[in-house]
Image (cartoon, rainbow, N blue to C red; front, top):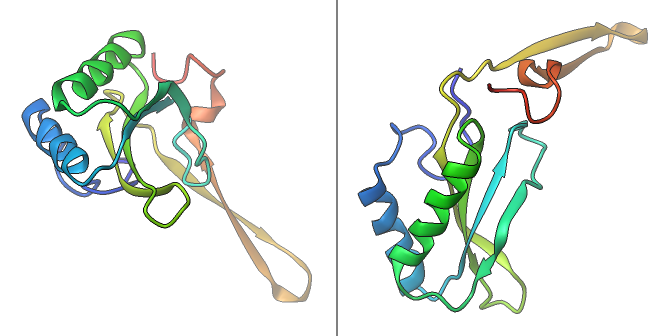
Amino acid sequence: MRITQGTFSFLPDLTDDEISRQIAYALDQGWPCSVEFTDDPHPRNSYWEMWGLPMFDLTDPAGVLLEVNECRKAYPNHYIRLNAYDARYGRQTTALSFIVQRPAAEPGFRLDREEASDRRIRYRTHAYATDRPQGERYS
């Protein structure tokens, strides 16, 4: 199952050249970039681990791509995403966010159904990856 979160998630994986062009677009807009990673991509898990600090002072896409590649080396079996922030409204707003790396095998989710009183039915998603300990989910 392919996790679909963020921009471009329904497209095939982007190449480094395509990622670099998206970084260039974000930097041209004045949006600083940051890199995040996780091994729990549940849709409600919006707080991924940060790889360093947001890169407010970088203006060259190669510098941001270098950080993406360093994160890839350190976490080869994790999801890695790139975020670009827009602060024009006086607060940090995510203007662009997309996944730049995925594990080779994505186990996906299952839907758990629970019947409650008054004929109510509750549904929960369960990520198969969370059946294993953190750090070992995609090895």
